Length: 563
Image (cartoon, rainbow, N blue to C red; front, top):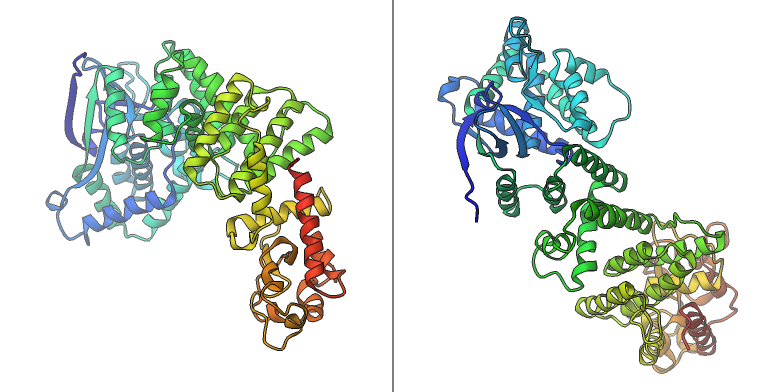
């Protein structure tokens, strides 16, 4: 193994933002992501360690800000920031805000920590201490590092990309917090920050070594997602610098488009597509082992796996089909995605990504999604555990890759025994399965009523018509006198949907009272087809429940194309 030439030293902020370094955030790094609470915590910590200002700065306790990892040639000042850009950016924002709020002379003295003044004699321009990635560098210079930057930033009202918006939010937070302090305390804070706050600077001349250091540090708990680490590792392997910039931009655009949290989740789904087994290590470790190693060419990995997977995942999350097709097929695809999203797990998502990626033919996508939703519903309703689900979806992923997922005997299809098990579960006490009952009743309601209905109601609850515990001498016990008669209580035929919170008092009202006061809406009609049908019944008897049960099962058989 090649030797890693690593240097590590503790440096105060004044020895980091100095002529020894020209810090540069490479274009393949993640965007600035510190939230208001992160910036608030940093400032509160500094003020707490600094005390009331009565102690000389040199006698104050030191404050440790963590470590940064740089790629730096000893013979040059340029240093690529492999890890630590979040802290360096936030410290630069704080220094710029302090410069603007500590008085002219004191503020001018802080300028040297933001940029190295140019020289007319040497013919050099102002050299900024920290340069952000290309997408944000100009914004950062103009609105933070320049002397009039904080004032311009405060007046800025245009909509900004996420990273620039967070820079503005944190700068304005620092401005507000500093305005509440006296000038003396602001100056004391500035002196404490540059003289008594420290970073451990880890540097190496070799990029690969820096990535290994970076990965070790971040695998051990620093606040960096596996997507960020993989970005540095994958794009860092592209030899051509211009191509690195292109692919960093491509990565960042798709990350911004689908959202940072969703983009992070994507890597877990992609891992499953290639690993086809339950997670045994970290997502990062298994993505490296089973995805990165399979795609030795980093450009193809970005294009064909990550970006393509992100667009497929985005369609799934939005319940949209972006391909060409007729309106009827598009509506069916999007409806199936809506049903899948209502499940209590996301184990089906990798298979859906594969389906959306593997087929440009909308009709074929529809057939696969119909089978996937039926399988997912089966696994939900029969209460298959997570290990059973993952084993089944692993088989599905392999079959999709081989093009046989919906061929005779394919794992996306239910066997005869599975179809029977599904019908038995549907015909049972469905109410007693909280994660199942709403899904099944909504599926049934859509089939019985307006097939274009959208269930975007904040509150959906399942209610019994025949109460669970009818009162003695009530109408219910006249119509359902024996325990055998009341065995239908938790079955589909006795259940309906309400768009309101449950009312324990109302649940025991007699049937006529329930219809009038509880099952009807303020407009006199129900939101749900199931409930509207109950309102049309004159009385509630075992025969009515049995009739409704038979119709419900027959309807759901048609929904899932069961024999």
